Length: 138
Image (cartoon, rainbow, N blue to C red; front, side, top):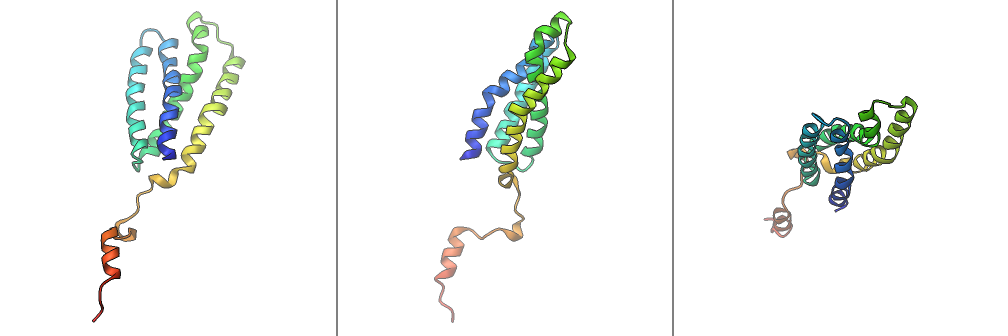
């Protein structure tokens, strides 16, 4: 339950972060943002279903969102051609501290849901366990 709420709550902020590519680069940024939105949808579905490889995909998505978030804040400076290096570093540190690290922590705490249990370690279906208990031994 918590995983699904987490996935749903992070999507709107992720959309704004990925919008930074279109804002910073008017010509090709829109196409990159569109591709990033498709990737966001794919990763969100993988996280929603708790697929085994979803954590690696989410890690790459967090990196792209971090860059997009920095570009979103610095878009006007990039377009005009006057980016302050110290300001860019501070904004990047803020995006990492307030978006990337909390998301990484949540995904790290939920990593047990993405583990594939080998067939030899799985419990039998509930029906088989209940019927086996009531069998009469001869």
